[in-house]
Amino acid sequence: MILWIFVGFSTFAQSQKDPKAKAILDGVSQKYQSLKGLQASFEYTYENEIDGSSQTNSGEVTIKGNSYLLKLDNQEIYNNGNTVWTYIESNGFKEVTINNVNTQEDELTPSSVYNMYKKGFNYQLLGEKNENGKTIQVVELTAEKANAPFKRVKLMVDKAQKDLIGWEIFDDQGTVFRYKFKDVDTNIDLKDDFFTFNASNYGKVEVIDLR
Image (tube, rainbow, N blue to C red; front, side):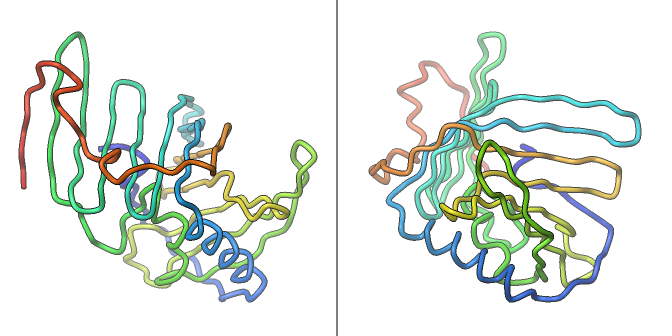
């Protein structure tokens, strides 16, 4: 199961709904909703603050509405809003697992990250910082419920462009997951079938249908 989609937490923090933070998050969400599509390369880092271990990798993501295609190393995940295909290729072996999309509100996906603040979270503006000539606003989300799977998430927003450029997810085991967009294209217009896995494009693939 990929790190991006499901990460659990067990700490609890209290916060308020900061109107300045809400204005920033609303601006990002509205801009995302206005796009025909988004395609980006990104870097993601896993760090364990307890033992000092870390690992950095890169990936690519394409998003349109609730649909996305995520590419990570030897794994590709297609989600057309109804069905999700997880394709893995290793040492010449090819396998795709098919599931219905999980509609639970506590999922974090490449598309839901733009709107996750709207229900179940408090938020506050932590401040601003300069990065590569840009002013970056840092907004922290904290879960309203103690048993929520996502407890704390930091979102980094380009103040001028209202673009989400990265986020950090913290768990109670001293682990931090960091994601940062690199090259971003917001001028793409993709057909819906782009987000549907087509086995004929991959040769011989073992299919595991769990629907």
